[in-house]
Image (cartoon, rainbow, N blue to C red; front, side, top):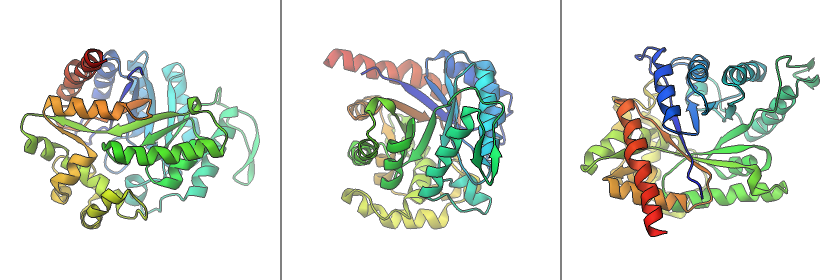
Length: 339
C-alpha cells in the first residue's frame, strides 16, 4: 500500500490570516496529499478565506472544509463557495460534510439527522451538475458548477459510517487511533458499500488522528489532552460502541458537561484535564518516536487509504517539520526493513 497523508488545521483567532498561505505552501511542498480546514465560525477564522488563500499558495494538495454542515450555511451557498475554491485551485477542491458539532451548537442549532445528510449529499450532487433541478421548493440551478466535486462525510457512528459507504466519495473517519476501534468502524463502511453494490475502490477512507512525539510521555499526553477531551465530548451521546470502550462512559459524560465550544482544541482550554491518560492514549498517538511509529504501522494495516494528522496549535511549523522529516520517513523505513 502506498502511504498517503493529509493535514487538518484551523486558523486561530490570534493568527494573522495571511500566514495561512505560508503554512499551506509548506504542507504542499512536504508532499501531503490534502489540506482539510476546520469550519468553526465562532472559534476560528473563516474557513473559506483560509481555503482560498491555500488554493492560491499550493500546487498539488487537495483542499476542503473538514468539515462543514447543512445548518450554518445553506447548501447552495456552500456549493457555490466550493466551486469557487475548485476554480482557484485548478480542480483540487473537496467538500467535507458532517452532522455539525462545534459550529452548529455554538450557533444554537441542532446537528443534522441521518436523513438530512442523505438528502444533503443528493442535493449537492444535483447542484454540481450545473443543471436545473427541483430543490428547496424552487427550480434551482448552480450556474457556476463545472464538475462533480468529491463529497466526503465525517463519520464515526454505525449509521453514519454506513451512509458514507452507500453514497459518498470519501469518509472522514473520526474517533480514535486504536486499531481495534477503527476496525469496528470500518466494518460499517463495508456494510454501506455492500448495500449500495459499490466497489471499495469508489470510496476513499481518510482516518483523522493526532499525535505528539516526545520521550516524556506525560508531556506528550498533556499536549493532546484538549483534542482527547473534544473527542470524549462527542462520544457522550453514542448508544453503541465497542465493548472495550464502555469503561470510558463516565469520562464522556464529564467531558460533555465541561466542554467549552469556544476553546475547541485550544491547548489552554480549561476543560482539557477531564479525560484520563488511558483514554488519551486510545484516541491519539503519544510517546517516543518508536512507540508512535509502531502504532502508525498498525493503523496502516487497516483498510484505509489515507491518514490525516490534526496539526495542533503551538509551534505548528515545527510539528509539520517533525512529521514530514522524521515520523513519516521512519514509518516508511521500518516498512522497507521489515518487508
